[in-house]
Image (tube, rainbow, N blue to C red; front, side, top):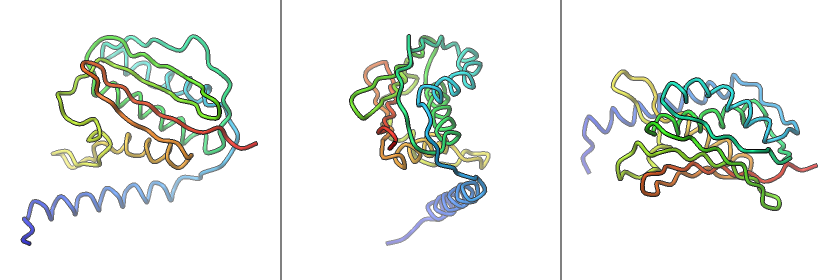
Length: 176
């Protein structure tokens, strides 16, 4: 099997991105603490609010935040939620950004719905690492957000349903 120069350059770029991410992970001091998912979501919405407004998205917030404790790195989860909101904004058109918080037994879900700015392409591609023409990484925020939720025992998915793009992040309750 013959490998093209372009495939080799792509693989080398991916290795470089992963190396950068590994270095960044090594430099961060992760701590495990008990915290409220709702408070982390509030912080993320506060951070991304100006970006959403600039993109013509009006945020519809949850009417209330149910109490839902998690055990993990609060700052890491706040960043993951920020990346989800930012990723949703980047792949949407003007309209409503609806943020929902659902609690079901020992699991919580944060759902972000926006008017889709995607064609019929697979939303799964949003989680792939890539390199832009200028050499900067693309997709790393959603890639890391997915990794963060999976490290908590949860998941992060994107679904394109007609004209709506929905990101659903779930996590189990933190141990007492």
